[in-house]
Image 1 (tube, helix red, strand yellow):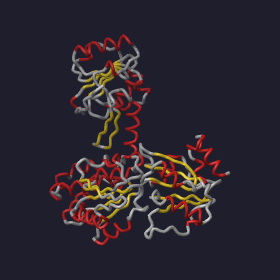
Image 2 (tube, rainbow, N blue to C red):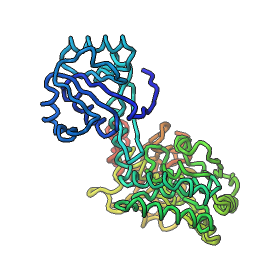
Image 3 (cartoon, one colour):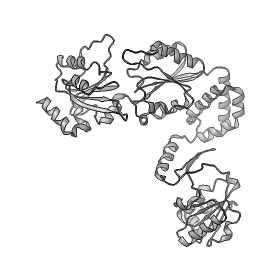
Image 4 (cartoon, rainbow, N blue to C red):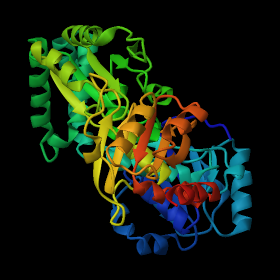
Length: 472
């Protein structure tokens, strides 16, 4: 059912509510503070308002009239919106017929097929009013969506919005550049919580002071090193999502999924700097140049990295380049590949029976060597290897040579958490063949250790037989 989303000016409308049901009284409560005129008509209306605790709230309120009698056709005079919420089907049908005959918008509560408009789920923060609707077809989804956004919207956002509206013209004169002004408002929104319990006048003063500092050049662009997670956009943190929505420039690598990139601001500049085997793209120095120049130009730059930016992502090199130029930098963590894949495959990385130690390593070592791996894997340990597909033969041979049993369970997960995820299981001795026979490609994670026995796929007979045979 298609809908036209509009907000009506409350003080210009007179709402008629037919009925004294719980739903009818809820509508009185919903609109009582909007400034709209409200008339509720039904036998028992006065008692229903009293039972709901609303009688005191409307006493002396000239905008709310309760008519304790049955509905009459004359009640439609001068009304602009009509709600019908009665258990009396005859009254419902009569009120609906007369309302439609007069061409008035009507809502029969919980009966969208009979209605000409629906009331969205909503919440407000001061002058900010947010409404959600599915046209009546998915009310539970609407309720969940409203609840999610309401939970993440600080109560102080309303006071901040009022103050921002009062000084909007002043801020525009102090920060004429539209990009810098948007960054300024974004920063205010991000820090709305700190204005809790402050008077509007104090908030207005702080906003103007902040805008003045922007004009003087105290605030420049910034760089956020953001973890994009392993690929599933639902695993993105709220803070990372917010950064994507605010970015002027989005610098991303090969491991970042298209679904995550799609969450960025529509007009953000997208810069691909991906590297793959044998192809280094713009190179690390080129990445430094892009993010530094963007920030020095006053832009908000998001350097988006797969997984978590502090794990095998050359973050220290980028931090050094940014600090050299005094650029404000923030790291926003993400769900790492091993965390996402462990959850997807249902492999606990530690287990009282199998492992009390977890080690994360990269299969790309600077000198290409694999040394002292015996201390990283074996009984009571879990080893997760990033970027280890190409080195699978060396990893397998090196670990076995150092005394790790060839029957140790192994999981290899390609494109973990994404729609095209593939999971394979075997043993350490059979790891090279497992990778080759299934043409496994990067990005893939190797998990080596007895915890693999906990995988959800373990219930599959072929996997159970494989491990039992290898352990015999």
